[in-house]
Image (cartoon, rainbow, N blue to C red; front, side):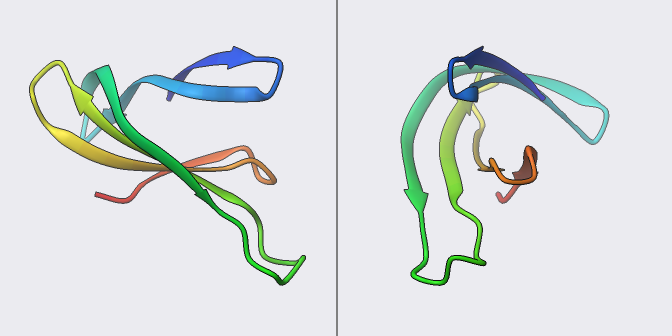
Length: 72
């Protein structure tokens, strides 16, 4: 995962590799987060992105673990 890293760690995805293919992100179509009442449940940041190939993917970032997941 390639990201813009600002003062909040990895804030915005820029590109990712899936099945050996690099996907450059042209647009963040939507973004939101989920935070549960249970303090043990980590916050999840979601990004709906459009790639240079015209594909749309859903990416999730878990700040607690500094981990990205492809949800598509």
